[in-house]
Image (tube, rainbow over all chains, first blue to last red):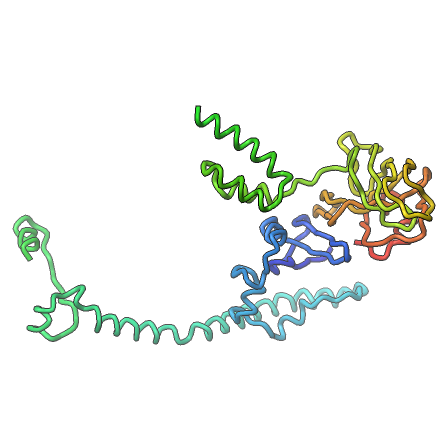
Amino acid sequence: MRLEKCWFCSSTIYPGHGIQFVRNDAKIFRFCRSKCHKNFKMKRNPRKLKWTKAYRRLHGKDMTQDSTFELERKRNRPERYDRNVTESTLKAIKKIDKIRVAREARHHAMRMKGKKAIEQQAAAKELEQSIHLVKAPAALQEDPSLTLPKMKIKVSQSQTEDRMEE
Amino acid sequence: MSASFTSKWSIAGRSLLGSLSNNLLGAVKTTHEVIPRLHYNSIFSQQQRTFIQMRTNLKVVDNSGAKRVMCIQALKGRRGARLGDTIIASVKEAQPRGKVKKGEVVYGVVVRAAMQRGRCDGSEIKFDDNAVVIVNKQGEPIGTRVFGPVPHELRKKKHLKILTLAEHIA
C-alpha cells in the first residue's frame, strides 16, 4: 500500500479514493477527488489556482524547503522488514510531524508579522481624514479633540425624544 | 405552453451538445437564456465514457499489420467489453504488408479503455483512448511488439504474453 499525492492539489490519496489517468506516453496522473480531476480535464494550471499546494508554495504562502520534508521523499527501493526499524520509524513520524507543524506555524507568523502595525496606521489615517462622517465640522471646531464622545443614554420616553432632536 | 416549448428546446440542445464543438455551443447557448449557464458547461466538459460495443472503433497497438479495427462482438458482458476483455473485431484499416489484411475477422484483447475500471483496492484507472492487441483464438498475440502502456488487469486475465511484450505496465 502506498499513499500517493494528488497531481493537482498535492493532498494525500488514501487507498480506495480517487482516479488514476494514464496518458498514452505512460505518464500517470493521480487525482484525489473529482474536483481535481475535472479541473485537470479543463486544462487548468494548478499553479494558478489559489487552493492548490502548488500555488501556495510558488507564492511563498507555505514553506518550501525544510529538512522535515526529507522523510516523505519517495523511495523506490523496498526495505527488508525489521521490527526495530519499523518501531523507530513510527516514533520518528510522530515527532517529525510535530516539528513540521511548529515550523509551519512559525512561517505563518513571520508572514503576518507587520500586519498589526499596518492596520494601526491605516486606522489613524482614516480617523484623520474621515472624522467628518461621524462628527459634524462645527462641533469639531468648538472642541478640537478628535475622539468620539462617550454618551450614556437612558432608555425612557423623555430621553428618546431628546435624542431625536439632536 | 412557453414552458413546455423551452423544455423541448433544452432536450434538443442537450442531445446536440453531446456531439458538437465549441463554436456551436456558443451559438446554441445564445438562443435560450432560460437554462442556467452552469448546466451547459457540465454537460460539455463531462464526456460519458461507456463500454466497447458493436461498431466501436479501436486503435491497434501491436505490429500485426492492422491499424484500426471495429468491434463486432464483445465476448462476455451484456453491455459491452471493458479493460482486459476479449472482443471479436473486423479489420478496417491495415498496413500493406502485414499478418492481417483488411476485412478479416480477428480476436482482440482490450488493453486501453477510456472508460474507468475499478481496481481491487478501490481506486479507478482510465486511459486516453481505446486500444486493442490482436490475438488468436488461444489468446496469444499475433504481433511481436506492443506499444504504449498496458494495465495490470491483463495478469489476472492470463494474458501474460502481452505483458511481457509491453513497454510500460500502468
